Length: 274
Image (cartoon, rainbow, N blue to C red; front, side, top):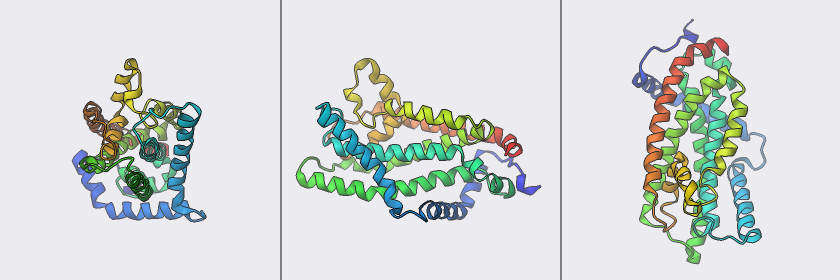
């Protein structure tokens, strides 16, 4: 049956096939967003409410309870907002991307679309939500700039590069985890546990410079550390940790290549399983 045909083209051909179906990806993304917020009173506001509330909680805990204002760059609340918005994009893309083949198993089996489309569609959907949350970030930047607490420097041009690096990483993770999760459903629980652990090993709520030297190398080697360095560079005066950025770029390319290889190798088994 053509509906379950497995593509035998190489990586370049598969990328081209996904690009040829970009209009379908766009349609799927629009459908996802409409369904997700169809019965929600606040709609897209939920994409910023969660990270904003968590930012307020961490800000209160560290500055008011522990009286630590040096956990991250100043202004600390802005530091938190940048990190938590990016982390939300990361975690939601990972968790939903891992189940992308299972969630639409009937369509995956019955259409001749490149199966990578279902992974790309998840990342694209979460990217749209992330972009919709950026005006709130811009608002806080404007407030802190007006107060003289920070200023936007020329390194702000690195922000979209940080987002692009994150997209590459997330597509790679999605391609790696989607077929594995389809075959081993326990992976969903494993992923959730690992993400909770990874949160505290990622400089989301703290700066790597505040970490004891014995652990600093581990934190700076976290691929998300490089992403956050690029996304925060234009809003804070602290120097960029280029080692983290280089490692983040290298890791993203490796995980994209590994994810593509695993996806191709397991595609046939996944189609039989789902």
